[in-house]
Length: 171
Ligand SMILES: [Zn+2]
Image: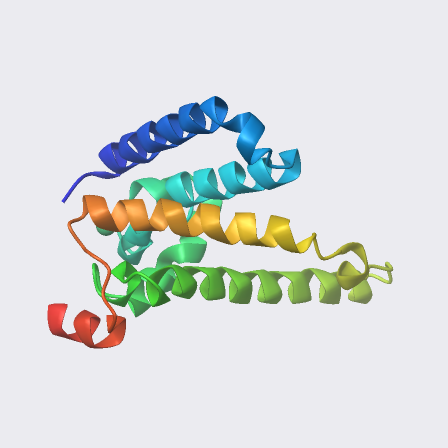
């Protein structure tokens, strides 16, 4: 199984190749810039910050340390998911991390809002969030999933139509 450093190197190499291919066909493809930026940003986040190996977050793992002191937020994820189990499946695996992060974000947002309310300061987090255009959302999803799938391929895990069953068997 490749180390975190090797996973990052593989992901960056493939991104470099994809960028070169895109550059060669940029006139035909003509992606709007926000879409390309969303894809690359999301891919990089999935390469450095939100990786399948966060299922080891109860120990030391490279992507966890990239969060700095916020790395402890991933420790419960490491407790919940055994290494290379459900976290390392093609469809559900990446989704578990997004849902986990969304849950953590909701709790933190709620706590911040409650604190502001307690202090008598006005803050409406929901008012400041605006949904991005649909093609940007798709680019974000694809960039993230591409980075996760490359990690799985490097781990020697191939697409599987029954991820839940497979995860149980691997454990
Ligand atoms: Zn892995």
